[in-house]
Image 1 (tube, rainbow, N blue to C red):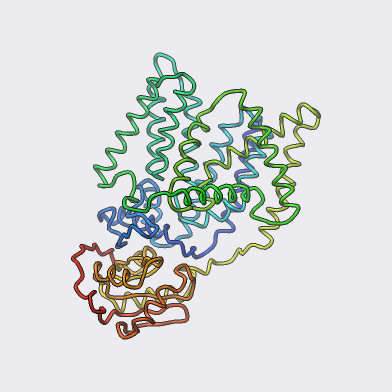
Image 2: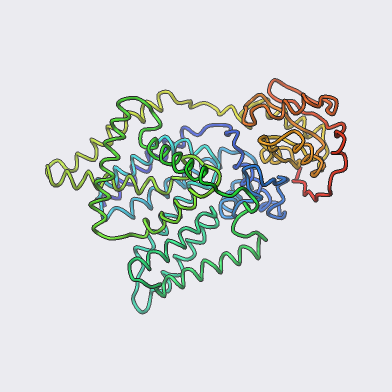
Length: 492
């Protein structure tokens, strides 16, 4: 009973901190816009993929996202519309559920005190604090990842109840895949777990995989979409794989010190990673778990993906690393000073709390002055709705956010290509307008130079301090006969 009070109080403290610091606005990165647009389509009864986003294989951003996260956003959208604050509060709930699953999974190995320390370190981590203000599927995926691990470990294998557990495991693995396509790693991990332990695939795993496959088939029947919308994107190269490995190694290390860079933070990180290695070596002798079996294909997939995704991509791995650090600390403390073993965990928390505190002391708790948190963006969206038609395609770097907030079809440019290639693409999609901005420089000024190089082809329709909307008056010679491309306009 006391342990339940402790974990409950800790989760309340974490939830209160995250809820009290939810911020208005959203980062420019507009993956969130497609998730919200899918939720909008679910609520309003339109085809799931009718988002107005005109897909181009050269630019990051799939044709569609899996449906589970939009499904859980849909009730929030029905009540609150495009207000992102309730959706961010839902992210806090997902984080608390993830921490509860992590606590339940490792409580038996670490004991109550050390598992509470793990939950505290993760729950107050700046990376998760930042993530709760991004309406993305990553935190929900962490919950399904560790819920699946908990269910696999708890599964019964007797002659009567095994199949019920197998069905539930299969359904939860489907929920992970339906949240993020890379969740297929859980299915692969389940098979790998059997093969490494037993050199065969058990009947319960066969049932789980069958249930998962049936759910995916039903998803395709209902929504018309498959595993993911990245078909046609770039393929991995040796350079992209090496870059991903370097990036994910760096952001994983930074996670434990809140990305603070000073001598003390480096010392804390060195101690933490040393403990993690110690814990891994000690724990390795006790056998292979489902979490390791699932992380092997998961980390392989994210390394092979041609575009890096930042710290959010390693969220499923960080609890596992934290567990090994605390396991290593516990094994050392119990061997060297058993009497002081419980205090060792809290000593580590205090050390990590210093760089965490430095992050929060310097952090911005005010509105995010990007997307809907920037007044000029809201003014722009109003101008787009007033000056363009519902079927007029627009070229803009943040195409998905523009489609969500204006109801206009939009496409992102290939700013790594040439002006001629962009003219060709504009012709193919029958583009009528183009947007430039100085609010960010993700395209390295490509669209600004594109307009300047053919100033006679554009009419300025609207401008404010951060944005300029141009009408495409004419196409240069050779680009005036676009090929026909069917475009579904999003709702106004």
